[in-house]
Image 1 (cartoon, rainbow, N blue to C red):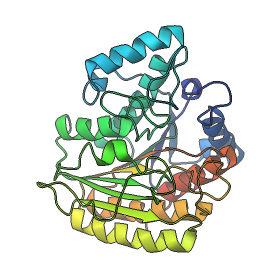
Image 2 (tube, rainbow, N blue to C red):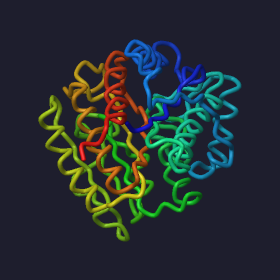
Image 3 (cartoon, rainbow, N blue to C red):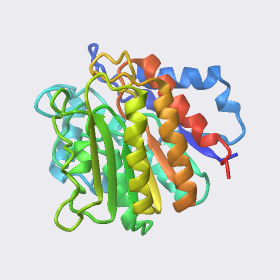
Length: 319
């Protein structure tokens, strides 16, 4: 059985926007309730780690000092917006956002130092945040920071980032669009129908990175069959990438019943993706894979999707 580090604790509930905002703590707490119901918290191979806050230096790996200072100021008053419309400030947002980043970096540290095969941060995967602005409910981009950290501190030279969130992970995709060392595969709902309106088939990488990016937009109402067909392409892409490390944004907002998207997956889609990446990680990257929860605004759905990922990571390899 493979070992899985799950980063979860009281602080995991602090990244929660007020006043009925869809990005609330109920998503993570629903996952944790299901973890306990299935007794996964006491299962051999699962180790629970408390969340930690990222350092200012870690935030600066991706974000500008001016933007970090803006979030810090807004965190004290809890007033205003951190972007142009849908990411409001709240008291403590700076600390809560640092916790998201720190917990993903903790997962990275654990797998890179051989303390776990796989890691999962359910509150991570804030893939819309820009260097100088929040976006799409995302304040600090933990995935982008983890990619830079892996390259600079752990000297990883071939990283595969796979994103199955219903929304295109624009904050990661375009930040590394011209980076030949970062391979990105993103399956999402077609941007003609869903925020942020990006992620087109013809986008395969910048001048120095042609062929290192794979964008697969799916039409509304797509279900497991369409997802699995798209994931076949991801597997072929991964075989070309031969990654030393895999980062997996496993947003649950593609499941049927999400209030703000139009895809119709079942939790089997997440099981399928996690099982395949589990195999790929052991084939190319010595098992090293960090998963991040991403979006999902039906708490029952996020619980089911993320449990499937956790259980798939625990499974024995078929070889």
